[in-house]
Image (cartoon, rainbow, N blue to C red; front, side):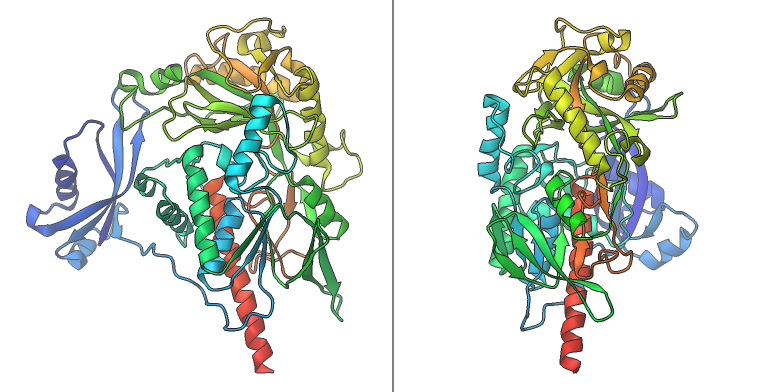
Length: 551
């Protein structure tokens, strides 16, 4: 099988044009091609009105060796790599202590699934509720202004990714094709098959709910155990005769203790109380950069026209997205993050008296507005104003300060503070909406967002909006809406681990993983990290079992 990359065809090409393009690339006749499949399909929209589709194809040919020799110097003709997932080991017949996974977001879900598929019967502890009950609790905040601190956009089965666009693409290095395993498992669980081959696959919230349930059922059918509303409040750590720290179990909020030597720490980025517990227990943590800013909303039709021109609305293109970045005169960088075409801005708070925004789309991406976070990078050196102790948790203090400020500016009712983009740039408070109506529930309270984030971030975003408008016409339109505040772009903490065995730098048996621990950013990368860490846990247990029997 040959893999052909960078095959370009017009957006409305005839079906037979793909086979013809293969023959042209390989300089062969029809009889030389047995079959082909589409591995990836993307598009190049740099020339509005002349958008091209870009294919990666796997082609079964008659004389593969001869063609590979002929195209030895062509990087776009290569053998098709083996992307099938292979398990690193299988569980021993008698497990003394089952591995524990903390958290059932994308990372914990895949860590648990891979461990279950290898026979390790993991115990998965999730502080929140099952996904359908959690969805009802989330709607309580959106419709009734009632926050459930343990069941919301951040906490519960599926993690924060459940209430998102369901994007399934990433720029991580993935030489072992773990991303392919993530996509294959999602399709098995009910995702549309197109996620396997489109270049920017997405699922949407409603489909994610059913998929997460199906994956949970698979884990349980393989002997795994999932416990909802079981928050981990402590870990048991003991030092050996050489002073090396080892995990020996976890303590739940109800007082129950679970004995284990292997704990996957698949926390979300909002598990602030758990980070505090780990810090008290002496687990090595460090502060890490993240970003802060607002959600911006524009008419999706404006984005479609700006990106696709006369080809806007084409079924193969769908709702247009964008990715923008600007380096400011004050040394800060502003960028768009988590862009949700045809979506809504959602309330994502997890603590009382605070307001947090996030973005969400359904699979159809057919809501009126496009939204994205427009955020400014903040560094650990920025945290000292909010926590001067030098604690690795100082970034959480910054987040809490501005989330509380957003709650106040929104009127103290879980409405979010908002402002027209034109008024924000001009430095005046907004008093009425224009054509763009905000989608945030329970509502948006117009104010002056210059008081909602640090001064350097205000200055940077004001400068960046002009630059973004030059790249995407209409981006700085007066009646576009900013809604504040976006603080959960990534974890403010990294739970450091070794590069080789994925265990904590100073606590053996503790495996930090995923977005909360600082090793992922999105559903796909979190799932991939869950697979990596599950493999490390499995190999560690197998080695311990082998060593015990050797004696």
